[in-house]
Image 1: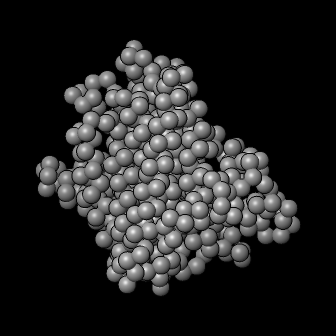
Image 2 (image 1 turned 60 degrees about the vertical axis):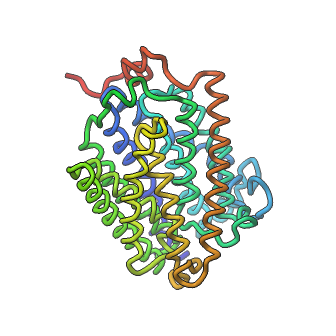
Image 3 (image 1 turned 120 degrees about the horizontal axis):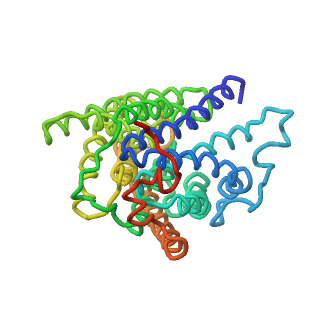
Length: 401
């Protein structure tokens, strides 16, 4: 990597880290006022625990390219991988370790939106590192270092549609099934308490997503530029699509809908950001906005209480992007050709790769949740939930009259 590549990757790393407080604000504005500090704490806790275990051992476990084991590397920090012995040189591997660490941080943070208003902070504090070790680490190893290609030899994922968004989305579903519904849901209205925070968070997420996607080129090159443009255009198309569907169906185009459409589209373009060109990004964004809008209605039909629509936006958005990638991938941009460029094999590999992650993540997350529920308990009691988690879990109040 030359100095320009290093500078871009350092900036991208900071941008992805900035997405975590953005996500905290996005989720924090969507919950009721008595739970906003709890949501901020759940997200910022990921910024505390994940970097520590990442540098100790999870980076080593998930980022060796031997392509054989359940995990990829050594249990305890294989520092050769992160380039500490090369600090007199360019430190490329150390930079990659830092960049990937930000992805490891935000992935469990995404799950927090599904369990809002009712999960014990102590249970969350244990769940995050355990899930990161047992689910996130092997999944990222499979997706990016070759193990899963024995089943799906052509599957591609540019910046984490399968490894991050589908993984977190299906884990959220498993966790809320064990956790149960919020008291009063769905008969009691639980609207966002501060849409200003939601829009601020959405803007920060969109800003940080340029590092998330364009940074995944690992260089300041043409593929990074393509990913940057795709991220911009898809987010815009997703917002317009969600607002149009919302206006047709409900008669109103809402602030929350605009923010949700942006995020849904960004999720969908993530696996394809450096692999598609032309006007494909508009298709990804428009389809994701409409599909994810419909997907969030399913929680009422099936009765699972996904508080802030993590399943409908991240799991469904990730699947939508992964499937569209199977059609629109263009090897001239990067990766492989999809159906529209003469290769149907990619679509099949995408389906197998996403399906394997869906099954694995759901089963292991469900097991982790069950063990926690049987030991320390997953959710707060009725009185604590009624008072609010800011007071009952943190002894604090966000707003003072």
